[in-house]
Length: 252
Image 1 (cartoon, rainbow, N blue to C red):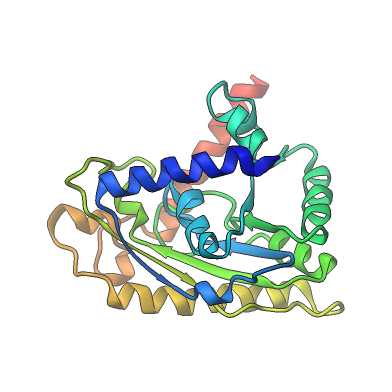
Image 2 (cartoon, rainbow, N blue to C red; image 1 turned 180 degrees about the horizontal axis):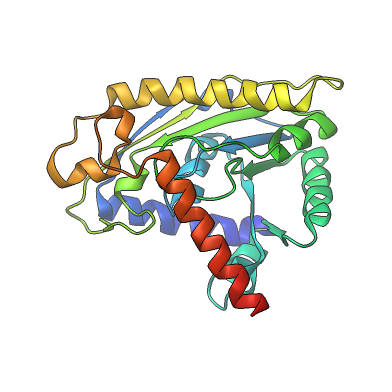
């Protein structure tokens, strides 16, 4: 069973967070259903977001099945763990298979974790959302849980120094919003924007309450809030460069 792999992984993650001295502020745990399926839609600014997003589900002994790119499942270290925990592999050339598997898992009463932005946000602002999370919830007849994480980018994010040591003691805020139900005939684009608006409102509160950053730490803060992170336009250009480089690598 997946739990046999998941439980020791959770214990290891808890130990890591303890050694890092990570100071969590978790709100909305009561919105995680005790039973039944749900889509957990999560913003993405840190390599550890998979671990952070699962925390609010642990008090109810729920295990989140995350959707992740295929390469993570074929890696010699992460592959056995991802497969053992029954996460969902996403092949960008066969997206329909991952979607069908997610629907099956949701209808079986599981929670599926999705990052609607698809890739990490370098600007630390919400990017445009892919409609997959909303479509899954609509087809499976389950709620969407808006989950926002703030502070994780200071621990480990793309192209910036990471702070994983015991002296880090970085605050990380995690909020689970009220479940959103997507009506059977609701316009997917409108529902997707409704989800994004709910997550932006949550993030605004978390950012306002977060300790003030200074000096070098301003690089982990969006320009809109007085930080020196890339602007959304600069971040999009960097993402496009990465995608082009990856495509050339496999087609050249």
